[in-house]
Every structure is written in structure tokens, then in C-alpha cells.
Image (cartoon, rainbow, N blue to C red):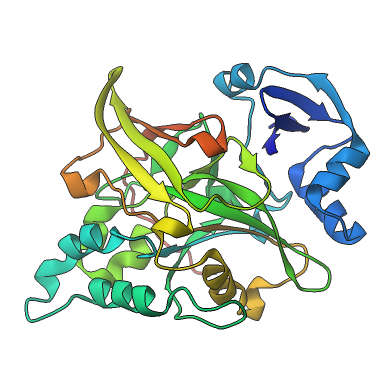
Length: 323
């Protein structure tokens, strides 16, 4: 089952090839919280609502009518976060970016990757090694498919990162509940990151895009997708990306534990979107993205592709006014 959120309000449920509106549902967030409160699975809540009018999901996507799959009504209560160096092969791209910083031995990136290989998949109920973790922003940085990913004026680069994201709501009991998974573009500034690894935090303060469909249920163990960059109507770069636990050095449960172990991230009503990492970057292949390029990320398990045009803000100096 897949869910999509309409920007104007309303939820679409797709089973197989048929997509229908969910009766009486304004938002996926509302349906998720209803499921938490009722102690039911999300599919059961949707069944209780019932399905109504048939819609053309592809046309709605082309018209820019679909939002990110889940959005909090208050963007300040929607957290975008992620983990890196979690996928088999992910160290090679990152290590190449930081190799000059450590010529005497392993880079910190490679050390972190090795830690994940050795301890990222603990037995059920056991705690594994904690991953690299980063903060992206609040709900104001969550971009829908079809809308531009705008690079800030201070950026030195704007590049795609094809990933899978998990969506979670925090119940009144302070427990995290997973709603589902979607495609994500964890848009980052790799040139800034390459200057010094301590600039990683700066490089991640960018928007990210999600959707357009939410996969409800378990994450497939072997996900095979495609990441493309279009320029002037032509594909200038494409590469397969792999995800799912068969292609990762961490389990999803371990990544979830190390995010939600902090009480800060277990506040009732909050929505969390957590990105699980990637091993595929056009930047690692020498691609410099330009304003107007279109990122396309797709995988059969997630329905419609995620597409965004690269935008660019003007550079400006920000001055603080004393009161």
C-alpha cells in the first residue's frame, strides 16, 4: 500500500495500479495519529475510513499537486535528520573526499564505516554501534516532488543524494511509531564538506525532498533504484543506487534506536523524517550540478519517481540587529 498527500488537503491510497482518495482524511499525519490513538495499524484505519473517488496519480504529480507524503501542520515540529556511512560501498565516495585530510592512515570516514561493518547489525534487542548523525532542518526544509531544491547563496555546491527516508510520529505516550518509507533526495553541499570534515554540519543545512509516495509496511531488504541528472532535456549522468538492509552496514532498527534514544526526539505529536544514507553520488564521479538541472530518483518499490529542479538563491550578507 502506498499513500500520497495532496497539497490542498486529502490523502490518496494506491493499491496496485488503482489510486483512490481516502474518505474523510485531510492528512497522512492525521491518519497516523488516529492509528496511534486507536492502537491500530495504519492500513486498518484506512480500511475503516474507506476509499472513495478514483484519481490519476501520475497527472496529479505532473501538475505539482502532491506534497511530501507526510507533513506536520506546524513545521517547527517536523524534524529532518539523517545518517551517513551506512551503506556498503558508501565509504569509498566519502573517503575519497577526505583522503587529503589524513595521509598517515585511515580517514575518520573509513574508521566510522568500519565501525558500522563490525557492529551496525546487532542481534534483535541488542544495541549496536551508533552511526554518524546529522541535522537537516525543520519542516520548512521539506520539499515536495516537482518543487525546486533551492541551494542557499552561501553554498559552494548543490548535489543530490538518493536515499530512503523513514517517517515517524511520536505518540502521547512518548513512543515513536513508524508511518512508512519514501524516496528522498538528501540534497547536500559536497564542496563545502570536502574542505574539512568538520564542515559536514554546514553542508547538510539544505532542503531535502521526499516522495511522492509513502510505502506503508516493511522496508524491502534489497532496493535497487536509479539516480539521474537531466540537463537541457538530456541525461548527463545516471547510476544505480542500492538500499535496504542487504546493502547496508546497519539495520534499520539500529539507526532508529540511535536517533530516538534522545528524549529530545520523543516529544508527543512531533513528526520525524530520518534519512538512512546512500553509497551513490554524482559528485564522486566528478559531476558539478548547475542551476536548472533536474534530479530524478526512482525505485520500483516506491511508485512514482522523485523529481526536483535545482534552484539557486543569491548570496547575501546577513546582519544581526541589536535590540
